[in-house]
Length: 356
Image 1 (cartoon, one colour):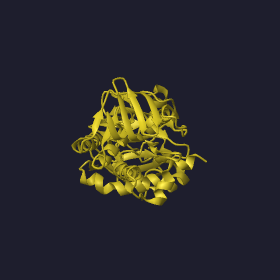
Image 2: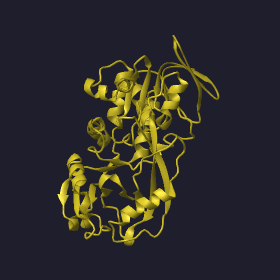
Image 3: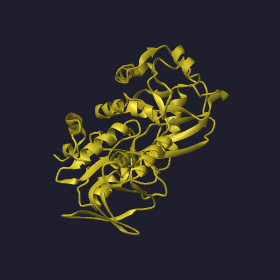
Image 4: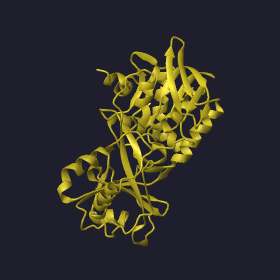
């Protein structure tokens, strides 16, 4: 099989890139798992908070808002930040960065009734956060890619990658694919894909984040509650289909793998959550974990390898992939197709910054 562009990775990065590129070139996407979005993309907290993340991510997220709203995948949620008395300085900095408005502990508890106002010293809120229907967004991108002729293949792990003057030869268990351009959207496995392709790794590091689903505290209905963050992102809680998702918000470095929750880490995070609440956690409904992959400087890596411009990095999204997907995919399409992306933003995201 021959194609103009071969994308490795079927998470939100790869599928959004396929949708943006397919109207302009022939595209094949390879995903090793049985389904698209099997790993990090299926285990997202699924929140659009456009002021959350490092500056390049915030720029991409703000630029993505209109497209996400037009796609019909956003539902109003709101966000609430809470802190204890000894966290005042960190609270003030985070509230300012996230453009939150201060509220009293009692007002915070009215928004999120499990909170104990006697344990909350500082609180701030905003309405600009929304839930993202991540499955609908993935499927929308997949439909768009296929509509424009892209081939999206699951159960297609890559076993070898070779490069010559004509481009790339990528081998799977069943065939070989020739491509002019290779897009590395392999998430936690992006450095491994680069090594297979003869490209030096960038030091992308997967980090585990564990989640617990618990019954709604006190038998209350959480449908209209905001998502709540503990200051310094030491925990968060989010309503989910009549229950709550609570995370210790850990970022423990791990090897790329099909992640699972760490029971001790979950227990520590739930204890931090309980320290602000009126109700104890008496049982878990389920638990799981995902991987968030970061470059050494914390910014995503989007753009061509400096010495091999037909190898495009689209990795290191660090958990911000869904909320920034439309603008990030447009940027990758601009880079891949030789159009002119925003120069300043591209420089902040380019892999060249990590090559010294």
